[in-house]
Image (cartoon, rainbow, N blue to C red; front, side, top):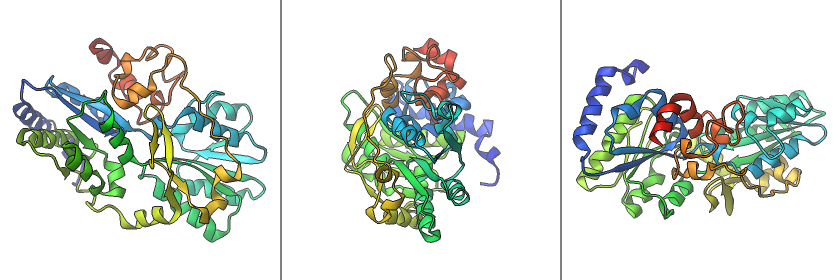
Length: 370
């Protein structure tokens, strides 16, 4: 790859689209899940649905870390922010995610010291510059962002910064994919595998999907040609009666993953016995917690976070949308009570949220389709 234009060339894309149409059997309905929210946004931003045959249905998956965070965890983070002499830091996506008492941005407007950061190291620098305050980083993300949190904790320990902690909400993608495969109301023929996550984990963790469930998985990049080529590879496997893991995103994703990043994860984190996901409920060993060796940086221990469960607002169907059971326009609140200016759920405000993608790029077409 030299230039991004290579992956957006109209002539090449048209050729791949024609090959997809030739490969797809007209008598069969194909349901392919793009696991990552980044893929969902690329699909709608570039109009890829319009070049696919009508019998190929793309189903959005749970690969948006902000979206799968249950409301109770947002409330827990805001409870930390409300404490005296605490600075809560978080990524921009989190600033407008609603809890039961408002969003971090609204709490900031009411006087809480909540700051947006671009990395956990930014939060550590704030802690070093404000020794009289306690700085807590609201950590979210899949395996993509977890290594940076781990390395920041190691750096804080090395520097002896004792007024810094992490409210850890890192989740892992494979248990969520297994939960979807085991769900009785879902039928998926294949997966467009997550590219960013796989740059850390590699491709091997998905082999059980092909082996145990007979479903193809193609790890994909995020450009239009990447996604269309991945769909074509899935169709070819299905046509041949095969199921295996393929790596379309070889320019970024090593098959065995990123060893230094994986080592950092193993050093700092351990798997939680269970964790609640919005829409999927409690999934065993699906999230990370900070190991006891680093308990001094664990906000859940330092602040005795209550961990109260909170149901979604009345009428919101975030869970069904997250699982791919409903399209965003089929939610009763989509585009009316729930919109980017006044979001009811995180799916409408996250840069990887399915509702945000539909609202921004395909609201009118999707509403007609629904």
